[in-house]
Length: 196
Image (cartoon, rainbow, N blue to C red; front, top):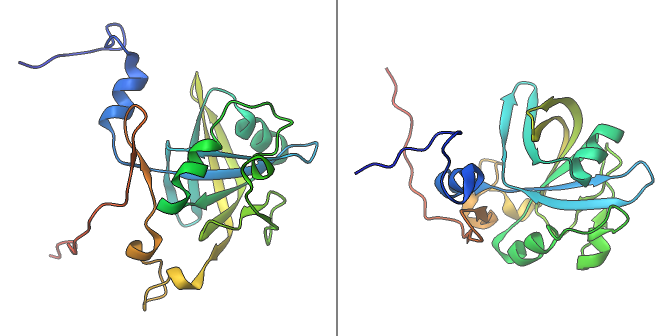
């Protein structure tokens, strides 16, 4: 038997819960911003992906109008940090509902490294950081999609494979699943795309 839900007839826990429990694993953008008043902010976002390769544009969706959203709209800059399994707990801790005057770097004992191009700092403990300038902000009703054009990428060299790209087995990025579940990096296999 199959159960059918529509937006007019959602499951008991709502469409958000159904979406996040079904569309998994989701990569995590650990987004650092800075307010117009100069207060750093840091928060994880699992509605995150690559939106375009040329130009390089990342997409982060904010559910509601949180500090990250307000800072990106106000300053036009953000950094997408890529965390590791070892940072999972502190990444989660930066999702705490605190006021915009709170510096999550300081609150969680993280190091705010100066970025190369944009004003918001990078997370020094994260091995990869994509510095972005606002390309567009798309209002989606209760959410907003933040599109950022990548202007600089910083990668710890110990994360690189022989081909110069990040090695998944070294990076070990966590993911978000449903409910309160986080995922460890999964096992992988090589599967080249078919050619004609």
